Length: 149
Image (tube, rainbow, N blue to C red; front, side):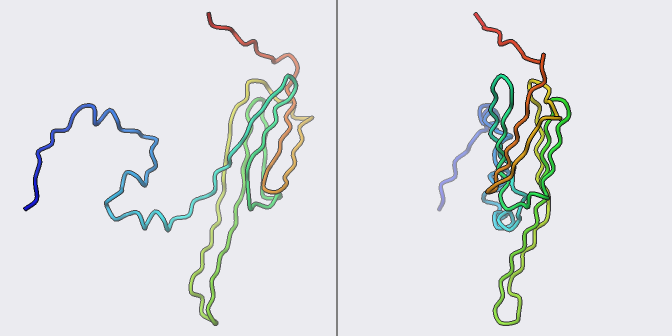
């Protein structure tokens, strides 16, 4: 016979709830994991952002996308990157299609910078799945770092 133990929930258990955990972890043990493994999602756009006194430099990883399918918008200090993704996988045995996976969607990333960008002098280059943006800062928009005592 199985040992049954009485367990009282504690306030500390509820306080440990992390809303930023992976949604798949919420459903562990409910038999839904294979469903989540079948769903393909749009790839995330990962960025590295650096700055110096005159420019911001952004490296955005957007692998497997044609450069004509990438749109970049700069409005003041807001930068938006949108990439359309089209992917087709097909497995055949003889003349029958055994498995076909088609994915089409878009990835979007938007963020704000501390200074406005001089839109007229920006440049962009896409090579080996990495988008490089050089965004010059507008004059007169430098912020002072305040030292905390």
